[in-house]
Length: 333
Image (cartoon, rainbow, N blue to C red; front, side, top):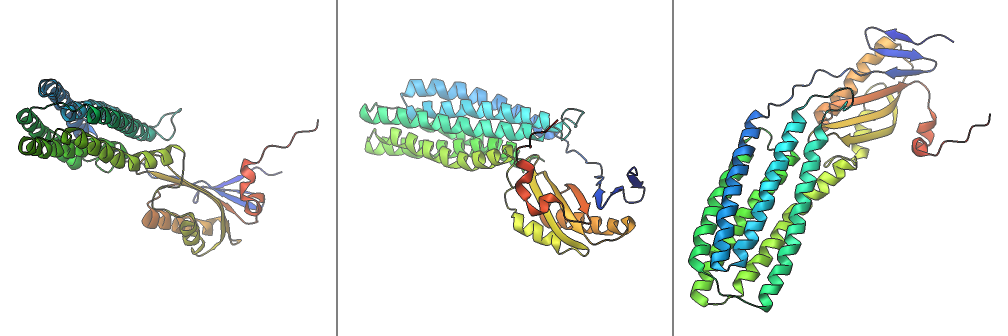
């Protein structure tokens, strides 16, 4: 049996009746995360200072809404710390062990952030129910002053995160959701405190807390769903397997595409592997087919990591795509 021969032009091995194409990816330029890191450090310190102020004001004013918002801000500080950790991990280069790098670090941080939001919201709903059963008088002026400060702090952090170079990352988006939820909570507290002052209706405070909790859960569900899909290596959001397959089949020289897998390395980096049945052409001509396929994947679907195996004859996976997951047959010695 002949040893596989390497074509130096195409980077392809010719073996038996199949052609295995080794795709060489261009060097990747990692984003500089220093600016985002500084924003996160400043935001974390500002949030912790505001938590201390709001907690003290909540105890003084007997306001469940302020205490609930202070608890929310504690998770905000945790969210920012996790986001900072995620940015650090994503900036680390790939190595011999983590061959894809540390993209999933940011996704994992986003998932934990979203879960903390949901857990906190459930606790707020419980405390609000208890306050409805036993209403307490609150100090409206303290609520208005502290909540107004909260609006300034949270909107400032939100704007800084949006302007950072990594605002599209799921990890930063999760932290931004925390900030937006807290800013809206503070707005609701100001409105509620004014209403309490002029109506004297104490149930406004726990009702506001309930609305805040529902808003937080609603905003966290999307981040939870997307991050979990990435961690389970599901199809990236916005892509359809059939559309990718049809686009690849439309490339000149491609006969069929099978054993196609697409997954996300991080929130914005996708990868693909597949088998492509092509016409029986010399290895030198197959390079044009490979470049065309990679061009379609990059321009239409933003997929820049691809491993494509060329074949001149149908393999077992083309007949049974699920056979890769089948249990191995016992060997008879």
